Amino acid sequence: MARHVPLYRALLELLRAISSCTALVPLLLPLSGDPGQDEEEEDEEHSEGQTSVGMLLAKMKTCVDTYTNRLRSKKDKSKGVMKADSSEPEPEGLTLLVPDIQKTAEIVCAATTSLRQANQERKLVESSKKASSRPKPLSILRSLEEKYVAAMKKLQFDTFEMVSEDEEGKLMFKVNYHYMSQVKNASDTNSAARSRRLAQEAVTLSTSLPLSSSSSVFVRCDEERLDIMKVLITGPADTPYANGCFEFDVYFPQDYPNSPPLVNLETTGGHSVRFNPNLYNDGKVCLSILNTWHGRPEEKWNPQTSSFLQVLVSVQSLILVAEPYFNEPGYERSRGTPSGTQSSREYDGNIRQATVKWAMLEQMRNPSPCFKEVIHKHFYLKRAEIMSQCEEWITDIQQYSSDKRVGRTMSHHAAALKRHTAQLREELLKLPCPDGLEPDGDEFSSKSAALILQELPGPDSEKPGGSQDGHCSEGQL
Image (cartoon, rainbow, N blue to C red):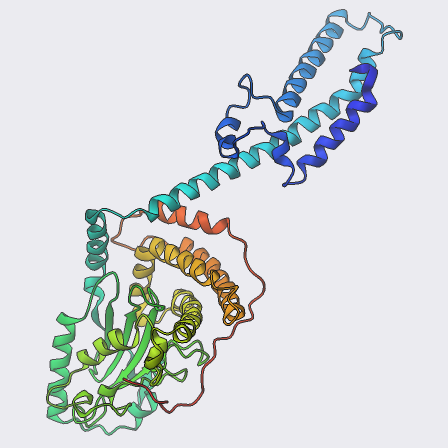
């Protein structure tokens, strides 16, 4: 070695350069005809028969360290009496080469170790994906459902101080409320029929609101006034709204129940998103039972037979549907046709990314005070499912990115969805375990690990569209 120091130093410099390039680091690991076996074989770095550049360099460092120690030991014993023979170049040559060997061995070891860890993490993620794709036993599914229902049942109906009076008797709202002006301008008189009906509605809501892990309804009324309410509906499974939290403001007018309650969607992305042909970006809800759409007489509000619970169930089941594109009147005729399917798929892509951005991310970052605990528990309990759902949405949208008609739009939606999903994962990782629940982060950790391996797309450029018109376009509900 001492006779070829320049050659060895050049080779060591080359190895350091290879170690600095992630794509070339595998060249330092044991070679195998089966790439799938690399990770397992690389774990046993010093096993015989598994030769690699990294292993040879590690052995060279061991030899150099041993040589250096022995040389130092001899010098100590001789107490400096011995003189080096200038005719033997080995000691001087190795003295020049030793630092390079030691430094290079450390760099190569760090690079190969990092690559092996990355390979192992990738294998864990792939195993997790395979495991999650297998059908879960009915007993496990039932326990997940039962866990969600048990945690959320007591949160379904409650009171919250939304409005109070100042010293002069003027109303002061403590939360954002769409119908603030109507409440302030309403007369103080309250009919016995209205009060009795509101009390009946409250009793019904306290016992009959829909609750399941696939979709639930939560209601808050003011502590002193039953005519002021807020509602949170979680998007039904297998829809573009799945697991999103959609908030509505509700006011029961003075002539209730002769006229229907007033309902306004608050989850609109700052009036930028039209989530459905029947949900306008200004918050207006088009529904026959609310008399905001000219449906058949039997579908309209009936003071004797209609109820607020019916309104909530209608929003949940007739608006937050699997294919909202076909809620637009006239579009139903295209259902099942290639053109209708493509348009519906494109529409869903936009709704999905908007749901993640505004009904998940925004709700977690800025939850309504009325539903803060509901939102916290909902996303904590569903976090693993939500991550799987987002991955499936991204995969589904990406497969149409090369379509001649909708490819460009679908690519745009996929990029936005990836970006929002990455941000959502960060928010979910921050969630502490809510009081009364047991931590169970293993499954979610594997889901988040999958997202870490995905590349983030470019800067945000999407802006979900929607008409600013507050009047209902033709809608079938």
